[in-house]
Length: 283
Figure (cartoon, rainbow, N blue to C red):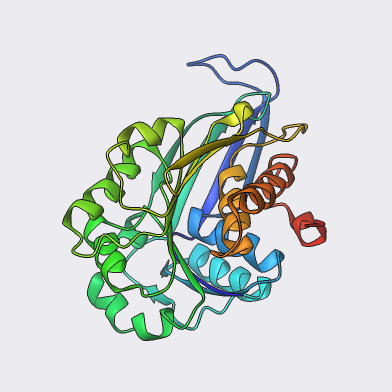
């Protein structure tokens, strides 16, 4: 399947405490630098699953931006629709995890992703719509998301990203003319912000250890989480949505949930936001 992903590509700086985290103090642990971004992670996971991926973003005009571009190309993504913005730094996300791998908090600098405008996308939309499905994240501004909702002609999926940024999806649907949203994925916190959103075909709410809640055709089902050893939860939701998209719009709710949860388990059992072992996952 050919999938176009529009969203953030950034440098991830992840700090994990070795022992129980003590606030307002220096904690021994491990600090890692890797490439991430919700959109980029979803695209990376889809490439590992064997899909043909076109990734659309703007890179920062610094060394990190060049490294991100090179990494995306090496992964196998088509980045021909991307652009480097020389006046902005690369997007960056810094997260702090406790000794169990759960994220305590994070800070995101996504100005270069927010510079993706409707005018910039308009020049690319015909090529975007050649995909079988399109995915976007809410690092894009509300007006950009609303424009995509109205101009994407294939099944359109949105990742809510975070509590504050999930508001962007709600605002986008309010101002959208068509309100043509195939599916969105959020966690329980983000779902509160999006509780008024009713214009969708499928809604996926991740509930951590309690599993995955799926609403489709007026029916809500809860699928239990798969047993696993959690090492890092940062990329679990990205892998889950990649699995959902990979399953395809025509797949049953049960099949979509099964593949999504398998991909999520693979992700959280890795120290990295994207587990390269996903390419060997038996679906």
